[in-house]
Image (cartoon, rainbow, N blue to C red; front, side, top):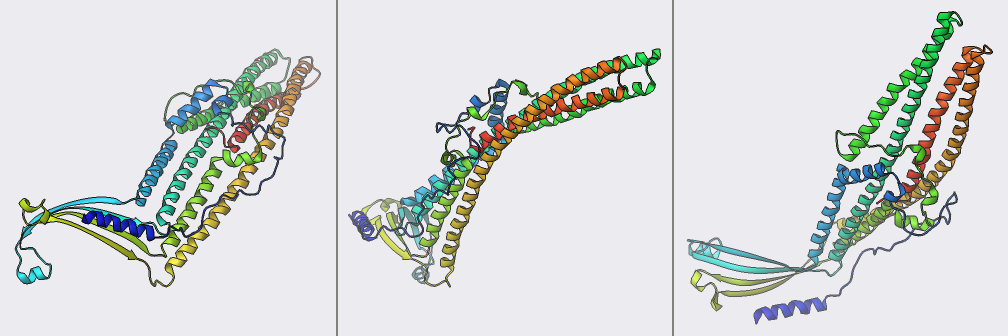
Length: 461
């Protein structure tokens, strides 16, 4: 019956305690947004296309999936998400009573004066107790702490998604660079074969007295120029392959190739960009920054609540006896209940300053969140401009390359019939070589601009 009375008393205290929460309250306030992007886009408000559908290249899709599965940074981010989830669960338990137990046994000898001072026990001592502790959340401190932990968990989840987006984009960009280098290597090898043939023909003409030695030496220079480009490109290919292996979390193995860059069909038209306001929900870094604002708001609530007293209830139920035979009897039973009200009295304004500092962290986090939002719109506008300009540049490079190829054919014919010097052929060879390399590079940059756009929109996971 005594226990029932204790529980009834505790409930009575709870009913008398007003359930108010002190401190700032989190309210979502979206930053000001422009209504349109700088470039015309597909404003479809549907879900953003998945990266596996965007990159229609089996080798690239396989490479990205292997990276997401094995990247060590991804493993670390996943562990942080799980840690935040467990901590959020642990913080939530503070809202409820905690139940503990203790079993104590011992004994000894002590004089009367020692017993009076509580310094010893004369004889045996046995104790079996259960204890209930409960901090009553009068001012919302525990609720603020719980919400802060949940916001941190959400922030870690969004950071995990942001990492996924970054890895997908990095693998795709590196892959397109690798295919660009593969194409450059083919250009250099093809150019070398052509110039070796020129050297053979001019060498034969020199031997027969139809041309001078300068033309022969110049043809050798042209040949070796192409030959020197090959190991240079091969070195870059190895570096890029190693970069992709590091992203996958492995130190060896081949990088499978799929479609060449000339067959990749990536354009902004296939990406449903949506209205600018949808960017706030799609970008995980924006969501993470917003979750940080929420977490700091709730932590400020905890700091404010620490300025007020706390109410704790403690209940003890158990048995105590000097002998085992009488331990679990009515004479050995005990039940006690305690209430404690404790709080700061005078600390030179320390708690107040801590609470004000916590509120300033909200202001800082909100400004950082807005900066992330503004950067996101800048990323989208830049990516759209990159695609537009690289598309125009690549078209010009294609025209330049075709003209250079035709000019070389004409110059070679003019030289064969003695209408021009070999210097003209050299100039046209170099022009074609450079035009082919530039066309390959701008094609890769055009593809990467679409990758950048997809990343800027927060897509990929």
